[in-house]
Length: 363
Image (cartoon, rainbow, N blue to C red; front, side):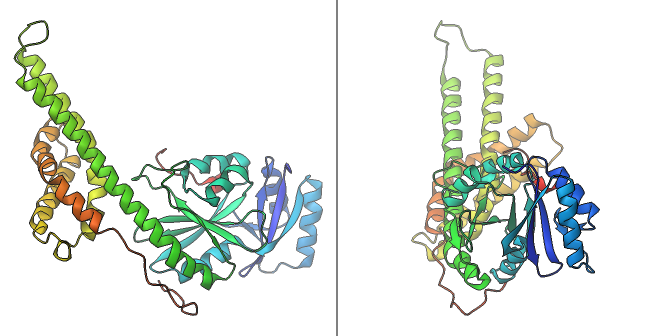
């Protein structure tokens, strides 16, 4: 691996974009700065507006002096490609660039990729010094967009993990990244017609599964608590005391609260997609309304200044509502899973783990 290098690519705004790379990337930063290149907010360098061939020649000379190699990419600047793609995706998307100058920064990214396809393998095994990100500003979905290693034209796109789903690299049920052509219009069509529907179905399934698991855990805790309450004596014939019952009750409420936080995270978007009137169980609408009210109550307690003990006690009736009617919610959630979207005509543009994934370009 080259210890320090500069990767140049054609940019529609500045003419030339430059990205430092390698274990000794600071030398590349120095060469670019001394040559008059200007760094943007994404930590990408650009030739000044009045730049010319002499400026580029100066960069090559300066880079040699600092023991930095200069390479010219056959592709256009990743930021331009990402912005063109974002403008054509359905909804409201924002494009940005991430720079992984040091190989370790790419390694730090790997756990955050939620992919069971080629993109995940590439990030794990190939050198990828930069990427574009595409963020749905309404729904919060973030996609990673990279040049496909070993290919001259194509790209890969896949999803980054969300904090709520608590999934990432290695999840066999993750959506599969897809290969994109260089044409922004056809790439946007592939994302809209193929990737996003599959991604949304996976998210829906994972949210539904997470709630089902949480409710099973609460039910198990409840059964344990009921067994404790109904027991007249310990195995050694010692009568149960008030302190034991109080401790068991507090433990039960605490554990139930912790499990129910999963419901708080995932239930609201699923309920929003439920359409009981169009389902085999139209009368479920009243139950979904009660479940929504229960989530709202617990969320208010979660945000309140009450002590944990008091919040747990007040939340229990709402949690019990979910224990009672959770299966009704789950059947509605399952029949409301997203379906495949109609394909867009080729010529029609589409309009609009850690506490946070680190942005490595800030190093």
